[in-house]
Image (cartoon, rainbow, N blue to C red):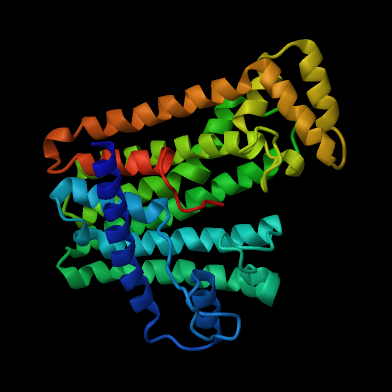
Length: 351
């Protein structure tokens, strides 16, 4: 039985991905010029010279998958939301391009050099802005599928508000890097904005594309938001402990980002642990050996298990939000599939 489930889940992801890939490519079909070559390069469709890439399989990230799963749950037909999914994927990729510049990330997830590394940070910022504009343009095409003007406007409002809220979360995250103490409520507020807003938007616009009522659309926004937050907490743990449990991952503590395990340790651990953690974080620049020591202190404080428990609670909150409108859903299994894929399955890499 487990083997059959794996086959079904792979087929679902592949079907979702192929449908969104077609609409993403269509958004570029009549757009020529260097800007669009940069964007095609980001998606892996062309090389640095604009020549078609040998292997050009566009990954589907969690935002597009949430939109399709929401529509699938509401109507039993995920094709209703392919344009909405393409739009939120474009928005998510605008975030990825900007994050590459912010973090100085040389390579993309497919190990090709990032846009900023090849063409410079100014062109990368411009390319990210272009992806945001394209996201809005694609979402407006919902009107071509028979979606009412009021619903299209609501979807656009939802996307714009989510992008603005995400920027608020990014601001908070950057600000917290310069603060030793960050409260747990402040951290969760930041994660809700930075990691929950666009995921929540994805669930809502997918539901709207499938003609869901306002209550159902809002419940699926909350569903997506909570899953986005749970995924961020899972990433917090992965960034600190890594696949070998040693803390040496590409996004480790050397940039002084405040994650839930660290916040938990600073609030609830012994005075000696708090003092040592504070001493490390007071350094102007952290050294590689500091990462391993911080992880050891977090283990001593039980902070990993605490963060994992909070991620599980957020996942349950997502389930509860979906269950509140279960009577309005034709295929609720689609929501369970999306949640499992995001939190436990083979996710496309998230930055």
